[in-house]
Each structure stands twice: as C-alpha cells, then as structure tokens.
Length: 478
Image (cartoon, rainbow, N blue to C red; front, side):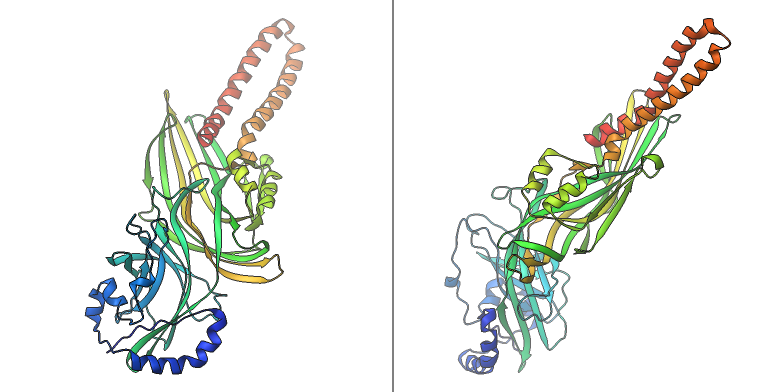
C-alpha cells in the first residue's frame, strides 16, 4: 500500500475555488510526484524527517529559525495503519532553548469555517526529534474508518519553561498555548492517502486571574472532645480578556480542567504533609451557559444564621465582584485588583472542602480535606461582539492552576464568631436578669457574691464556646 502526503494550504475564502479545481490539481500533482511505498511497521519506526520528506513540496528552507520565538507550529498530520494519529511540528527557538509540546486541542468532523466545533484536549508523546522538527503521537486518539476524515486542530500547548515563562496572577501557568487553526482532510484514493489543509480563525484569550472563593456550609464543635470541624464550598473561577474582540455578551463556552482530592495535615498550624486521595488527576470538561445559575447555602446546621450565595456561571467581571460583595463576600485585595482589570469571569466548578481540629494538651492537630482544580483552560466561546455579530470560535488559552489560598470568604465564616458571641451575651443577660430578680427577693446579702460568680461563669462559657471558631478561623485565614 502506498502513501503520499500532499498539502494544499488555503484560506476560508479560497475553499470554493479549491473544491472546484482540486480534481485537476490532484491529477497534475500525481504526474509530477513519484510514488512512495511504505509499510506500517516501517512508518511507525520512521523519524520525523523521513516522514516529512515524503512530500516533494516540503523544504526545510521554508522554516526559519528564531531564537526568541518560543511557539510550537503544526506543519503536518498523518495517520498510521494501526489507527494512530501523528502530529509534526516546527520549533523556531530549538537551537537556543529546547521546548516540547505537551497537549493539543482537536475536534473530529467537518466544519466549513471552524465554527460550531467543540475541541477535546489530548496529551502528546514525543516520538522523534531532529533539529527544529518533532513528531508526536496523539495519545488516546483513534482514527476512524470514515471515507473522509476531518481533523480540526485549534491550538497546541507546550510545557512551561521557568527561564522564559511567567505565572498567571493567583496561581501558576502549567502549559503555554499557541494558535493552529488548521482543518486537515484525509482520504484514500487509488490505494494512497492524501491530506489537504484548510485554515480557520481562532480566538486569543488571556487569563488575568485564577482562584476560588470559599463559602462556609457548616460548623460543628464537640466541647468535651476538644475538637471542631467545618464544611465549606469552594467555587473555582477564571477571569480573562479577549484579545481581538469586545464581547457584549457570552452565550456559552467549553472549559477543561483536572481535579484531584487530597488531605493536608498540620501540627500547631504548621504544615506537615499532603496525602493524595486520587492517584492521578482526573480530567473533566464542562459546558457553561449564560442561563446557568448556582445557589450555595452556608451555615446549614445553624438555621438562624443561614445565608446563601446565588450567582451565574458566566458574568462580566464587574458583575462578578458586585454579585458576591452584595451577598457578604469579602475579596482579597489582590484578587479584587485583578478582577477589576478583567473583562469576563467563568465560575466553572464547585467542590467540597472541610477541616477538623483536635486539641491534645498544648498540641493542636488539624486536617484539611480539599480538591485541587488544575490545568484549567478555555476551549471554545460563543459570543456577541460589539459589531453585533455572533461568533463561535475555538479558543487559544494557557492552562493555569490556582494556588491554595482562597481569594474570598463568605460572610458566614468571617462573622460567625461575632454572631455567636452576640447570641451568648444576649442569653447570658436574660438569664442573669431572671436570676438576679429571683435571688433579690430571698437573699439580698448574697447578691454581690452571686453577681461575681455569675460573671466569671459566663466569661468561661463564652471562651469555651468561641475557642473552636477562633481555631477554625485562624486555620482558614492562614
């Protein structure tokens, strides 16, 4: 079986013309190009240059090296006879710094202009490298048996390099993203496989801040066991700007991330170790809509202190701030500064967190349970632009991971100790007045002594009741 790689690079405007003349062009190219026979085992063992040079039109002179260009460029795809998909790339800065691709966003299926596609993120494994050119296997991608196969590559990611890359505010950048915008059409003709390539537009999105807000959901204490525990809801968000558009409204979007459960252990508020409950991060993809609304209740076990937070999945940054502040949320100064300078915010995931503390003598043992949301990246956005046109574009967006410090606290957690103090004081006053009135009628000489004893008793009770909340507050504010 013979294989031949023929690339036809067009723009969207030229697609109609290319369709009409493709048959003629193909016949001419078959006459001009010699046939190359290749067997499956030989193909899979080939190096990157052996594969690329099958195309008579390929020339290394077309790829200029640039020591300050840290991007990864896709130049070709190829299917193996085992149903695997390979991607061939060019790295302009290879001779000054070696950068490797890490993952790629691909959607399978035809699209006339790149709209309406929902890319999936696949990891890449390096198969061969020669100079600035690399060959990668797309992990987990299976080539289908369709007569016409369309591979829409929206963007490609590379690993972060600490010398040339910087972290996002509120966390870390884990992978850098670069636009590809290529649709590859693969099909068999006369026992040969041909590839033609068309381009489509992508949307550059810059993450300005990533983090989470913590909302209290329950607090319980066991005075006799010298322990306390708290339950929380963490709402994860990503703030961003559109680089080349001004969106008046965002209708929906796709976003991917990984999650991994853990336990953190502390002794006297000093971190000792982290235990991962999931062996590996679990990948997930969510669909966000402008009609999606979320409601989270806090202080569930204290009905008279119950509060709730209601918000939308997709919000303008200023609405995101006002929505939570109006409901008692207190943002960190850093988070509010960066959110103020952002255009949009996606509130994309809620996770459960909890903390428990136990006092043994003078030692305080604490355990935090939480979920790490990592490698968040926006895959697609459908929006109304300022020119009143609706766009549905694949997104080019770095992968980021928020740090472990909450960027805002629900008022329930921050004010719970004060509220409990007020309630206990009111109860103490009422009981004190009743007791004083009763005793005043029977034992007037003992009033001064009883008043002192009563005051001391109330102070002790207040200290015991508020101690767990002080410990919990100090633990989650650290």
